[in-house]
Image 1: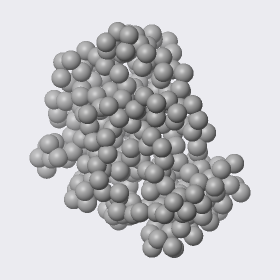
Image 2: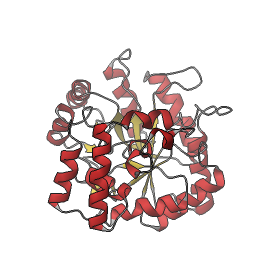
Image 3: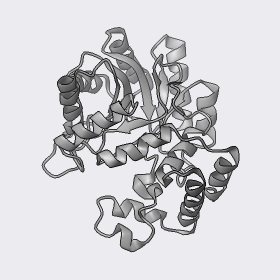
Image 4: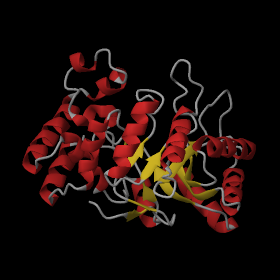
Length: 316
């Protein structure tokens, strides 16, 4: 799993694991975040995913904390040419939301400043904005690409119908098009991507980089009962997986992990990276030890039988 993969038609390539920056400025402070980033790049990682809204939900934060930490790390380490940076616009930040052209134009400048860079490698629409015409949003992104401020654009949290409409508008009007999709997708949450959306990505060569690849930590195997989630930062999110299907997935992960001599998280990421249309999953870490665990997924190979067993366990 160490070979780099193309991110659809974006012109970008990445190893089969992307580091999620949602924890920076939240459950990982600046010093810890720097150590995580150092370990990730030293281990062969090359792409970091963040968003302007990370981590506005933390009391005392206002958003932009993750981008700021990443920008400071890039400047301190002189690593801008070594890594790809993806960020996003569109979520509620300081009372403004959506994908109107003015919002995009203002947000990109703020992100560039916080990231201490003159170009964003991959700029995502964080979620669909049905109140702004797709043409307006795509024209705004196209201006950024032509100005050299953004290399490629992607969509996050779009359904198949809206993504296809956006692709047709880009083709018809000669605009930059979404070349990467960031959907919710993992072994225990599959219905939002598998089916029409996955088929569209395969047909139109859209690179797929799923978020929540480890289901908020559930697929690491550390949450196996309600007692395990009590008092945890993501306890209320993880608790919904503690059902017959979720426990069946954990049992399959345990079995394959034993066979492969790997950790359950590595197995879950390898399964995801093997799915049709998926370029690389996104996973975050709150310690260097967790980074080392995640990086093992870039070297792990599973047999077709092991992938099939995991697949069957995760079916309804």
